[in-house]
Amino acid sequence: MCIAARLAVAGALGADPVPQGRLVATVGAGVLAAAAALAVAAAVMMGVARRPLLAAVRGLRRSDRQEVHGG
Image (cartoon, rainbow, N blue to C red; front, side, top):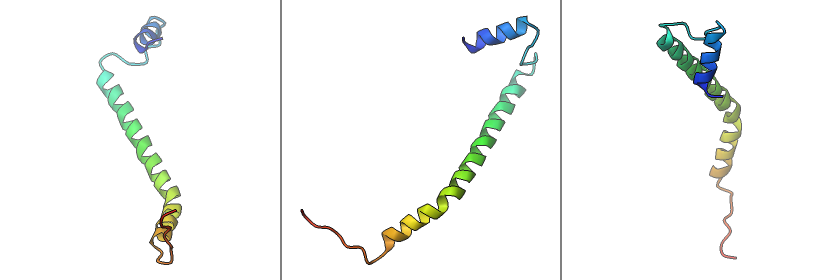
């Protein structure tokens, strides 16, 4: 069911999720909440992945690696 139909049904039942005249504020609050959630998720991912990524970089920079040539 599309969003417009859901809003129409909710309005007909008297449970309007978007108050009249406050649509821009409601959408703005949703956008801000989404941005905050993305910022928190990015911070958590960077905090969790930092140690394994640094270990991989150190492993690539080691000078005792040997290259495989030809077949």
